[in-house]
Image 1 (tube, rainbow, N blue to C red):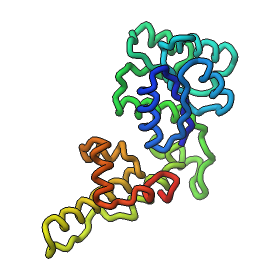
Image 2 (image 1 turned 30 degrees about the horizontal axis):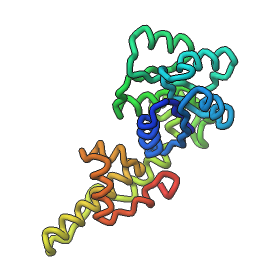
Image 3 (image 1 turned 30 degrees about the vertical axis):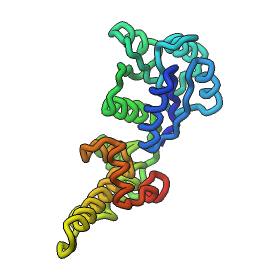
Image 4 (image 1 turned 90 degrees about the horizontal axis):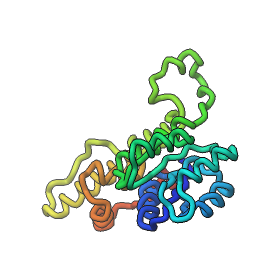
Length: 230
């Protein structure tokens, strides 16, 4: 997973992006202005920066130019704006931004942009033992870096829970339904590596409703957290 710096002067946006990306397993640092962003970038050397254009002191385009001119643009930068135009997007990419997101940012666009930006800059690891250079070059894109490094995390949890299970039907309806729902959510949490965001999307529930439902059913959320056994 990556270390991502979120730069935005609006607390609500910083908190929302942090929650979503943390849920995806990333480490999030936040800054509300250019001065804080400079300090965090120097201290943390993030893998990716989400940078708002319109900020009260120094705007995002100016900060992007500054980093580029000083040779500090060593990480991909995704620009964000609620008042973006095609000209703004073109200008941002001209000065080194890898993508542009218009607010309000949808969940799908955010996750897709982050994933694609990290893939573009990820170093290609050496071929795993037993895989020849020729074989690796013939592999489809989804099996090349960085996905090879993620496969053990993504595949192993899903193998632990079968998609077909047996349930004891000779019991009260409520108990039988709760048992089914618990198994259903545990399966999807395991399949999605513990990502509440993806499970909410898959099951059609709001995140808050989903969280309450899981607590009510007694689902062990800590077991499905990334880095905590998945």
